[in-house]
Image 1 (cartoon, one colour):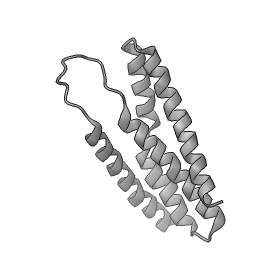
Image 2: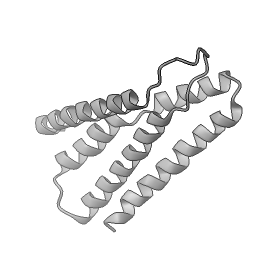
Image 3: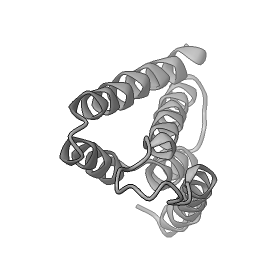
Image 4: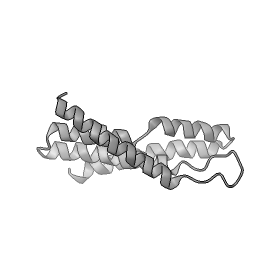
Length: 128
């Protein structure tokens, strides 16, 4: 990895992390209801689907063009990697299960997996 590639991954990673923070902030709810139950993890689903689409799109564009390697790696690894979150997905699923919401936990698993795969496939197919 070149110094330029490392710098670009860092810059794009920061942008992805800030976008994730913005999504979390937009979807956060005040705990006005007084219950310990978590709300549906919409922001995690959104960032995982968008990040999957970005990676699929970057892979497709890279295969069909002369997009320079540092740029494709920076966007896929930095931006999409900083945006998406496997750990929040798993924690939210475990929390839903712990709250005795097994159907919601399974739906969360299935939604992230199926929509993420679909978004990646769409990104790959756009520039085929």
